[in-house]
Image (cartoon, rainbow, N blue to C red; front, side, top):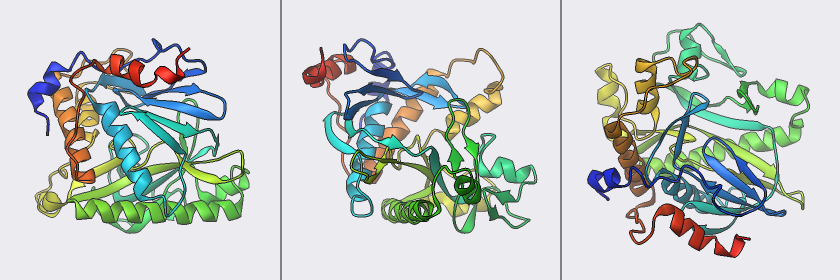
Length: 322
């Protein structure tokens, strides 16, 4: 595993923008930059760190970790559902099949936790017991495991995703009933596979989200990302029970501690200007991302020390440049 000192040396070598690439069809999202090639997409995962619907910091190697973790999971779930991956020409890049995206995110949760306004724990602590059609009992505690995983879908929006129930999704015509039932089955199957592999590697897959699209041949594909520390929450299995008994937060290997830091130092939803995340916090998050990559995949994280990330990206995407 690379050292924190190496991460510190790369604080200024983050991929925060890719507009320097002369490729048509550019779209900038929170974390990913997308280039539309017609029947396929160049999906570049940057080092931008998003939470609370805004960018908090740039995290060295984060984009590479996310893209390569997704590649691992896409490969290890392809027997459950086919995915959009065509090629991975660079550690930060996936060439994916262009699809019409279903306007719903399929959020699967196994534990009552979270710190954002839309999280299960925050809603529960406010007295909400009907969570997207899942009726939760009174008396549950923070970070408690559900009897079985629940599906809490959200309707995609340009501003804020909106939690909805299965009934609302069907009634509003977002997805027909038969397709919804298929998605529900696939989402729980993917989560079960993720839970199994994570547990084998000393991790608890706490919650995650899935997205689906339909290609030009009418086939439904798994798209976007899967089981990354941006789309998922992971805890360390070995220490979970003891920390829960002591009233402590589970030991996590995701961005939750960064969310909590901003919660403690500002109002990340209302403050126009946010404080800068301390370097040590950024380095720690990068280190956790890399640790998670190695725990999940069983592979050593490798970096290209001969080029800056932007030089390497330009070199590996040369075939697509104008």
